[in-house]
Length: 168
Image 1 (cartoon, rainbow, N blue to C red):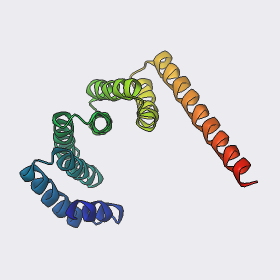
Image 2 (image 1 turned 90 degrees about the horizontal axis):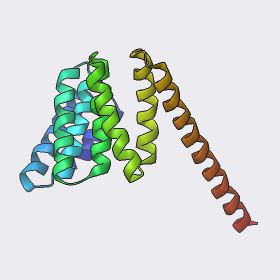
Image 3 (image 1 turned 90 degrees about the vertical axis):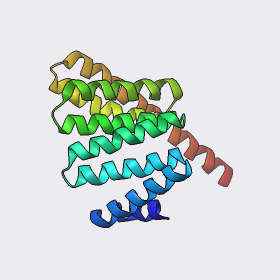
């Protein structure tokens, strides 16, 4: 319940309360061995720290979240947390490290079919490649992202048409 309350408080931008509840949830989940849930709470703490301008502390929480996700074999969470680490490293001006985190997230997302994570990472990755002066690579990433978006739109249209056919 503390973790869920922390999540709601993040949405309400009540960061002090969210921090307290997310920290309590993380400690509880670690105590009972629920590593995946502890990782989710650690990720929430990372979000809170980033939102309050504490990028260094946020990075530590994101790394803890990723470590817990790795120990619980949750590759979807590892991909998400690698993306979050990339974002916080980007914000700290650590571009090479951020690129490596994005690449790890992308690799996992491609291999395991985490489409939405992949699309989110590609968007941030292309921006960072441009900042690094790698324009040709950024263009390839943008093309991949455009292709994925088009595929998602086409799939949504097809599903919508199928639903219409069933109704009528």
